[in-house]
Image (cartoon, rainbow, N blue to C red; front, side, top):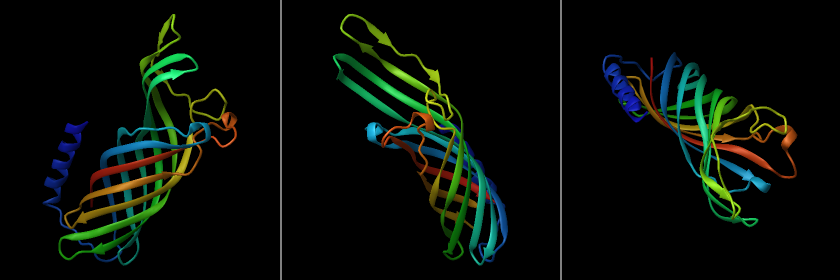
Length: 229
């Protein structure tokens, strides 16, 4: 994945050297960007745990549609790799538990951001963005590395696919929504480097499995390199 991102960045910079665009006015563009996600969960109630960062990736295609001088509406469609990690080592109810749990989730998101561009002379412009997103969890896997022992026997866990839905035996809800906040710099040759924070607002716990104050929400910090024309 690292080699793929580096190669993609090299291609984008090479292409940008031959494509000059202006940053003024309210023109329209299309673009793509890809990068790395650092994701985790925020939990409450029984799900308030020490979640660790999961490293994933993101890929987005988007359009910029001018509605004013240096102000754009930016809809897109995005593939987001999210999830989290949990580590455990100790005794629970007399049983010894050790190991790592990793949850990898693939989601298709549809963000709609408002973008304000602040020109910085001939070099390019700073881009500030914010807006809602709706996501659809399409695939995922629970991965285990460790064991569970009751003193007389030991059990090792095996990986399994995540079940999405609203029933009590599902793992996660199939729909997610929240808000995006972004900061980026776009060069006049079309190359963009930026960061985005995805604040999940919906409860990922399946509807029929919810009790008391148990809530689980996405938290995703993403970095990307892209090109628009």
